[in-house]
Amino acid sequence: MRVFNFNKAIGLASSGVEYAQKYRRELLAGLAGVEDYYVFTDYLSTNIAHLTGRLGFRPDQVLWLYHLLSGRQTVPGSVTLDAFRAWVAQPHTLEEETPGRVLLRLTAPGTGAPEGGYYRVFLLDGAVDRVETVLSQPGEQLVTVAHYDESLSHVEHYLDGRPVRRSFYTPAGRLAAEQVLAGQEIVQTRLTPDSPLWTATSGRPQGHGRDGQRALAYRGDLVLDGRSALYQFVFDALLSRPDDVVIVDRAVDVIDALYPVIGSRRLLSVVHAEHYDLKQADDGVLLWNNHYEHVFTRPDLVDTVVVSTRQQQARLRAQLAEAGTDIEVAWVPVGYAEGHPSASYRPHALVTASRLASEKHLDLLVRAVALARERLPGLSLDIYGEGQRDPLTAVIDEVGAAGYVSLRGHQELDEVLGQYGLYVTASTSEGFGLSLLEALAQGLPIVGFDVEYGNRELVTPGRNGELVPYTGTDGDVSALAEAIVKVVSSPELPAVRAAALERAADFLPERVRARWAGLLLGGGEGGVRPGAGGAPC
Image (cartoon, rainbow, N blue to C red):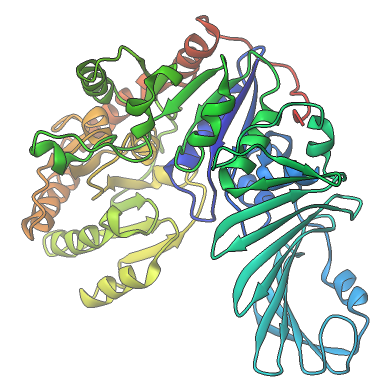
């Protein structure tokens, strides 16, 4: 059985969706007979291998839509700066702009750019990732951005500062596909006979484009109009076996192209967040989250909805029943936990991990820690994650917390969390909260808001942490501060930490893997799968 996990994009500041896929990959690796792949559809501006490698994905498991078109493998970059400079050949000077970014300023006319132009080279792990070609007369103009892995992968062409065309190349250097853009929208994609995907499927019926028109074969090329027609063509080629299973992690811009080609194959939709608008629910009319609206509009095409908490399972089942459908709602935690408590920890050291984004309300945490520190002078807070640093830094400076609140960036937390005394969160909506589970597995109590779903699923107030009401007022800061002081200064802190470990034991890998086995294979604990096969295309 092949399982294709569909997602839109992945970035340096990966979200809970990508971490959920990371955990799923590790769990499915233990199921006999399952080959799992991870499909990314959005155009990315950097080598996807650099991004997926950070989360432990094997290169052969990663299927980027544009690599499928051009027949390239997902591999780290290997073109050196010296090799690129040798290709330039023209006289130039080398200027370092920042770490990982250099300028090759041309000093004589030649191929590629006139005198006074330059190449801006971006390096990842010592290899060339992308190269901007900039003309300096008249005025600085970005002309192309060339992307590399083991060789030239693709080129973006710019006009008046906007991308208008993309060219994708096979590993042998032949043109595989070209794409015309308007703004950021895909207008048309043309596949040449050198595209292995077009060659492999040239005898098969094609899907329909966004306007209901069939894809056109013209002088040996395949012309696909719009995004949906492109996606349908790739998905149809990918899903070539009747027992293929599709798991959708981000549905927007993906689900409409999957529906026409899914056929009788199983389609599982994973819910990673609140599936409806709570404000609209107060008016008695439910407004569905656009990532999950397809479950309600086309329930006939969705076999199973997968949620990560029992509470969301019960709520969604009731809402689907009210909508007149009995679609299955399965409970499978998005992650697992293996307890690794530290023998020594700092009780007054607080930690949180999330994207640095406004919806995570990290500013509330900083203010709460500053307030709690008035009663517990030794408190400190380390924040792990990447994103919008400037707004958070401004709050840290405002409350004078630079000496005890630190932004630690993106790091692996397995060997880090155990040194802290308490995990804190101010997020007001989490489908599960993987970082909460990781903290519990290290013996950390949790302080956060009393909100759905992960906080209430994982935290029992007074036992393994504290939850405080969320009001959306200034009182939230003082409530969080009070809870922090209560847990950290409690004489029962060792017992609270023990209760955290006990809760995490409910999410041991063998237990969560068994749920995936039941969902995909119809039951059983699963076995250890031997070495994975190659990519399906």
